Length: 55
Image 1 (cartoon, rainbow, N blue to C red):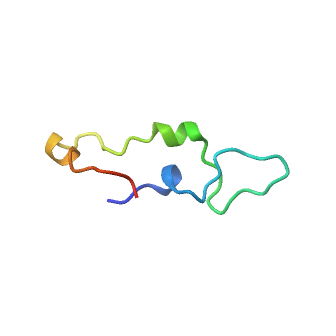
Image 2: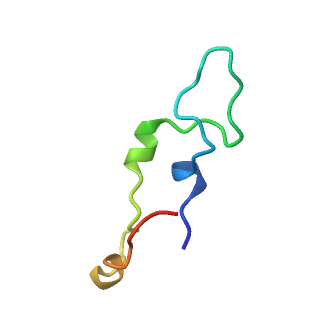
């Protein structure tokens, strides 16, 4: 499984700058980034331990 782009890709801006166009990916507020839960509900504890990082 790969990381959802709307939460964790670095080509998205974290805040809107007045007079600046949006970055390629658009706008993703930091609050949304920090709220991302990489372990999906229902994943067994054994499998959850295998989640090491987001890509």
